Image (tube, rainbow, N blue to C red):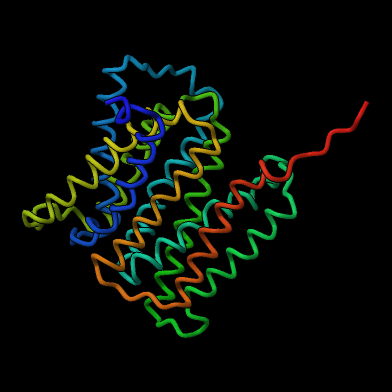
Length: 296
């Protein structure tokens, strides 16, 4: 039983569950914005219950000086899901997921701009090689129109997720699970009018399978899994947490190929290895290249 309560298991299990999201989204015949809305609403309820049970209160003082950043990150969070879910409709899950996992490298490139962080030569190489991997998964001109749209949507989602990560760096004084709850709540408030004017509410059109898939995405993939993730995160080093996060895309690619039977070419496999491999190397770069200390 200790294994199931260990931080490493909780984070690894959360990443594995996140990786199965595409399988369920494929069976929800609703507009992407509406799926994102229901996902945030269910997450608000479940994460709110978790905060109540654990007596983790949110103080208005925590938000001091962070309201604008919270608003931007919440908009980016909701839009990120919309673009990612839309990407699944245009291209394969593996292609959309690998495009989406350009996000960590985008964060590295933008961090010097917003936080004056130093970028090493190794990190620049990782960015170039990850971008080369993205070119490879497009098939170097052989991709169809829908695939290109799907890749563009996946990249847009990656940029938006990178925005969330950068915004979270600005709100480090707010506990992770509290910050996520607030972002879900604000994203819900923004998505309700967005959905009402773009396509309306079509929940009653779902059959039993669609409802089950939607509840799973909202309750399990978001509410329960985020609680698992943040419960385990505090007991891991940043490096360990970063490495475990790559379980997500690996599971998604395996589901794409072996369960959804979506085609993946040898060139796309190489591109995927480039993106994930150099993204992992990018995470390890600060530990590999350490500043030299001058002898006194």
